[in-house]
Length: 364
Image 1: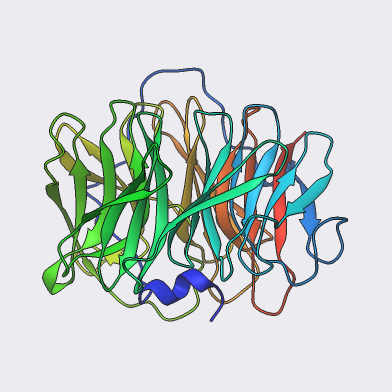
Image 2: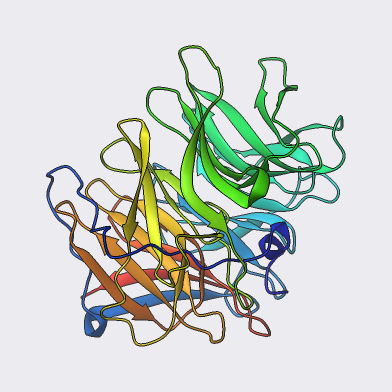
């Protein structure tokens, strides 16, 4: 088992047929993906980089508004920060016993917030590294796999015997909203600018769906994904966050656990005009197999990362403002993915038997 996230469900290839073209994003200044020869990397390695302990496993990663990049380390466990000057620090005080920090996002309050797979729990970390966790012990068989902000308040998505949504109240407790027991949630979870919550899940008969909890009335709406669950051979890295809000304001997501019409192709999806739309990813430019999982966005484009399930390498895809796709191979096995304020991709990297790494993508 390569990662904790693999235990959430059987892994799947995602695909669709040739009818799906590259997605169209709104017109904006373009930032094109660099050619393979132009890629340079700055790498932080567990056990070798000062402040990054041996045995650490960096999972998700996200920038703050001050030029720092934060990450979750579920093995130590800890919350880490890479400062603008390149120094790396991990923080552990304030984590609950048994904590397993997974997804991390910036909050509107200036703090970073993370999901804790150790239970129904989320945490806050201040710019100085002070950690506070909030939890509910009511549903012991449920784990938090997603975190999002809706109108300034953190929400969590729970996976397990009782799938659920929860939000942190002003009093510091977690208010729970139960989901149907036959729903199997996955790490795709996000809130858009209107306050609508979105997540992906499997319903009965292993059919995928995208669910929306609209801000206007909070009546759960469920849209068919037009995909089904399928098994993959082995060992694909499942990103801690697989859904984001794109430059056009719509939710976008990767589909590692799903397959469309038995096709081996991979795709990403979005919800636009009230329905799910799928777009095939190109393999052109890739020299090794790579299964897409992570997703991030800058002001003009989408970024997708994927790893080779059989080797320590992977790929980055970029879809620019005109819908043009570019794909490049990278000599690392990507896990979590983010784009900083300068438009530079960052990803965590993990491959069995090798130390965990954090990689910043540089260009000439």
